[in-house]
Each structure stands twice: as structure tokens, then as C-alpha cells.
Length: 315
Image (cartoon, rainbow, N blue to C red):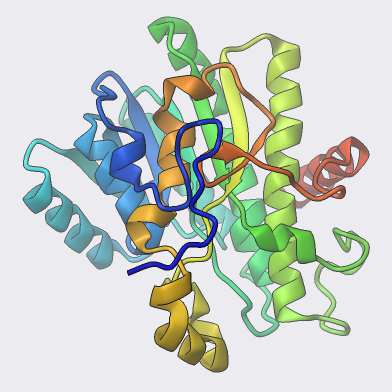
């Protein structure tokens, strides 16, 4: 049993104890199509399951195709009417992201919801295939490129379906604990001064900045698509696998002070489906309520600089 001391309901009527099923109760998503990245485990798998439960056609972006097949089968056992598919996607590789987007477009499907969920945490210093620091590459750059490549599809769908499109970036409270300068533009790929947790914080700060800048672009264009970011809560998932000490602590006390996966996926499902979020863009959520992001995350100048910097990385 979870010992939440802060399970007070917020303005949305939900709290840290609310589950993804509870926050989407009674919502019909049968006219919607969604992509969920990192859907083979943890909150990504639960997000895919609950969206499918609500009738959404879910396409899981998965790095491990056989794991994707297992999750798909498990979801169909649980939700026999589920419309669920998976496509290979390795967010640490720009070529894989481009390949996924191209494969998705060839299916001729609409796209209402893009859930940028996949993430890695506190890895030892590594460069991606594209020679970008691995956490920044996977958590931010891959999702940034994916979003850009799918945006025309989302705009077309929003226009044709007359339904609001939603982009949801799963960030973390750790966005408040990046490096001092926020984003180390000149030292992204430098091993000197690298700190696994600070680099994770940097990538999660980038998720919030990306959603905020994207919200400004979409608003400026007058398209009916929103972009928000969120902290899913402290959840005992395999994100902790890189840190054996943290992992040990999580295993012992996690179940008492952390969210379970059903609670962890709640804010994502709320931001993706709930009618109360309609028209809300450029916000940061926690426990299914609008929350306070860090001053760096709210820095419009930093968001614009990150946008331009990331464009230069993916071009």
C-alpha cells in the first residue's frame, strides 16, 4: 500500500493516488489514433493499455520488437477489443527515428496524440550513434525530431477530424536539477564534468522547454494542437537499473513512498485524453494538475535557443 502524504486532490479532482484508469473513466477515445514511445515497460506500457482500453488506436514505438509483441499480446488479453500495433523505434538513433516516421506515414493513419514517453536515466557517459550524449540524444533530440517529422500529419488530422491534437512530453521533477547553466550547449558531448543525474536533469529540462516552445509555435500558427509536459511522479520502474544503490533502496522502500505504474501513467493519460485539458498548452503537470516548473524551464529565451540548437543537431 502506498503511503502518500500528499494525496490531497487538486483542482482537477485527482491526486497522486489517482490511476490512469480513474482519470480517463467514461472517456471515449475511439475516434483517436496515438503514438506512445517507450511502450514496452513501465508507464509507457500502462499508458498504451489504458488508451487502448478507452478505444484509442495505439501505435507503440518500441526499441525491442519482440518485447513490443509481448506487450501487445498482454494488452489484447486484458482488453480484447484493443486496436494496438507496434513499430520499431530507437530514439537514440536519428536514422531510426526517420525510419519510424516514414513507416508510420506509409500506413496512411491519422495522428491525434503523440506521447513522447520513452527515456533512459543516469547512464554512464556514452555517445549515441550520431555522436550525441546518450541521455540528451534519447530523451530529447530523438523526440524533438520525431515530433517535427509527424507534425504535418497531426495538423492534417486536427483539421480533417476537427478534433484537437495533443503532444505530451513525459519529463520529470528532475528537470529542476540540471547542470547550473541548464543546458550545456557548448559542452553537451563533453565527458569532462559529466554527471549522470545532472545530464538526466538536463534532458528532462529539455523536454519541458521543447513542449513550451512547441506550444508557442503551434499557437502562432493557429493550429488546434496543444503541447504540454509532465512529471509522472516517483515510480519504481526499470529506469533505476543503472544505479544499483538507488535500485536497492527503491526495491526496499519504493512500494511505500513511490507510485505504482497505474498511478505513474495517470498524468500522461489525463493530459492526453481529459476534456479539462482541452485548449491548455505550454503547461507542466504533476499528479494530474498544473504544477510549477523550474524558472529555467519557464525561460522563453532558453527554450528558443534550445529549439535552434536542436534543429542544428538533426539537420
